[in-house]
Length: 167
Image (cartoon, rainbow, N blue to C red; front, side, top):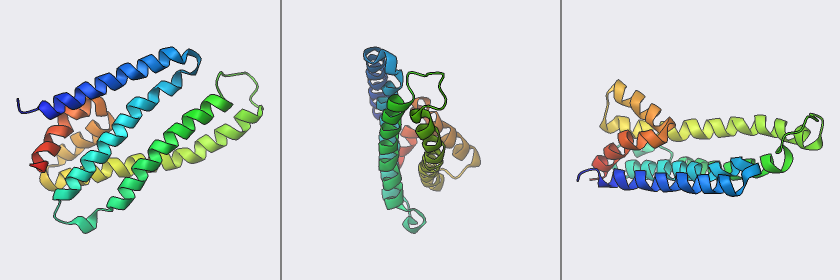
């Protein structure tokens, strides 16, 4: 079967989602902790695809691989720290908007969200630019961006293309 790698990755993703649900069940009150396994899978999947594409691109000077790797690692750290701080300071919600947790967390959340959006945008753009070199159509670039944003479904669109580039 030609898409065995894609099927295996999708199986790993499904297992990750099961782990997420078990964590959600175990930490009933702190349900947001459960998003960590799936977000971790998505970030690592995108990082590995970026590395595979980078090996094959012709114009490596147009790609900042160290920045891509750094933003990937920092986005994982950011997610874990954000969820831990969210659970310490804000969860469970209370009606006291002037509590020290709310006063600390929400400004931190807004400012740090700028970094998260930038890292997410850069990492998706990195993989998309690499794939555009091999699949130059405008429609392919649009579908790649959409597939990376909605990565559980995107595995079926992006991974076969990355596997073809790798060969």
